[in-house]
Image 1 (cartoon, rainbow, N blue to C red):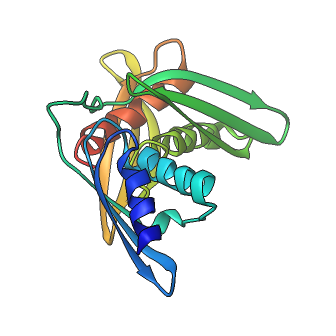
Image 2 (cartoon, rainbow, N blue to C red):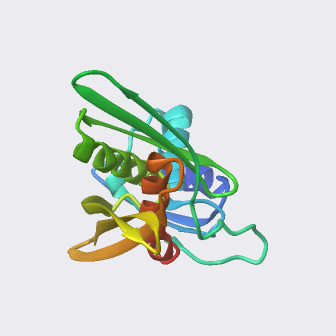
Amino acid sequence: MSSVKKYMDLIDKLAGIIKSHIVINDEEITEIHVLSDTSRSPKQLARDIQSALMVRFGVNVDHKLISIAQIPSKNTMKLTDRLVFEEISISKNKERFTARVTLCDGNSTFSGEATGLNDLMEGNKIICQATLNAVLNFVNPCVVLSPVEIKAFDLAGEKVVAVCIAVKIQSKVEHFLGSSFIGDDAGSAVVKATLDALNRKLANT
């Protein structure tokens, strides 16, 4: 029990943590329950907990054992509810197409990468997947994101791209639609359409 108290005392000192509770079975950590404010994302908090326990005590904990509940706190700065597009880089050869997307929440950056066939129709889907991979570094680890369909069309004399995203949280799957005018950069438009589909959902995740 003295070890458990040391673990909890360490976790409680991490930025954003309000209180923690650890369940031990046969001297192995089986559950870590954490109450935190909203100054940091659950994924960031889980990584901090894993790193702190490993560095201080040499204890390796699977992120699946960490459960995080968040409540707003007047004494801390709340994470912004929206991710914004910061950068996209694309590299391709005759066979492969690779996209790397960087997003920002106002305090931190989150990057994602995806690779696939160098095909006109596949390129937009790869960019969308790279964006989703960046988003997954921001949201709760239990969320699953997947591109369903991407289409470009004309609207009011301009080119528009629409993106449909499947979002799975626990056993529930929902579909969300986002769009963006293409303008001079089709790749950036796909990123913005993907975020348009997700940002309202992310604010409640």
